Length: 289
Image (cartoon, rainbow, N blue to C red):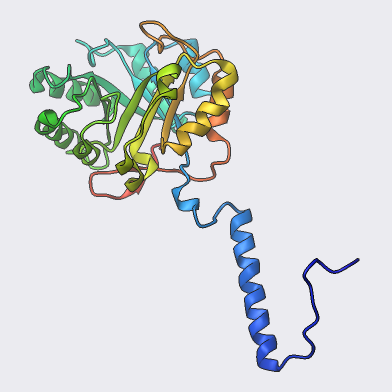
C-alpha cells in the first residue's frame, strides 16, 4: 500500500518530538471521533426535534395511532371544545389522556385567548378544569397576541400555570412575536401556516440566541414529496418542535395525517437526545414523561 499524497520522511526525531507528535495524533483522533459522532463544532446548534400533534379530533382511531407511534409524539394538544376544557369532564377524553401519558406523551390542555381579549378569569377556569378533570397541568394558549401590548396578560396567565412546579406553557401567536414573549412561554409556536407560506418565511436574527426547544412550528398543506425537505428546512430554522401535515382547509388538524408514520420518522431521524422544554426556572427537561 502506498503512502498518502504529501507524505514525506523527516528522519529521526527526539523523544520529546515523538511525544509531541503522539499527542497531536491522539488529539486528531479525538476530533475525528467527535465529528463522526455528530459532536463537531456546530453540534450544539443542531436542533434535536420532537414531533407534536394538535389533536383536534375526538378519542378514537387517530388518537390510538398517535399513541402507538414509534417514537411517540413528544406532545399532544388536547382540544375538547375549540375554546377550552368544556362544561364537564368527558370520560372518553379522560381514558385517552391516561393512555397517552402512559406512553410517555405530554398532554397540553387547549385554551383559546382570543388575542388577549378573552377574560383572564375564563382562561384560568379552563386551566383549573384541565387539572381537576384530566390531571393535565401543561397548557397550550392559542390565538396569542404577538405585539408587546399583550405581554402583561400572558405573563399573568403563565404565572398562573407555573404555580404547579414543572408545568409548561406553549404560546401560539402563529408568527414571530415581540421578542419578550420568548421569556413568557416555555415553547412558542412561531409559525402556523401553509407550505407555500413557509417557503417564504423570514426568520428574525435573534432566534439564533435561543435553544431550538423554545420554538415550535406547524406546517400544513405539505406535499408528500416535500416532507423530508420541509423537516430539514425547519431544523435550519431552529424548530425544536414540529408538526407537518398534508391536510389543508379550515381545520387541517381534524385528522391525523395519512402519512403520519413517514412524518414522525422524518422528524426523529438523526436525533439521539432531546432538545427539551425549559421550565420557568431555566432548567431543561424533556417534554416526554
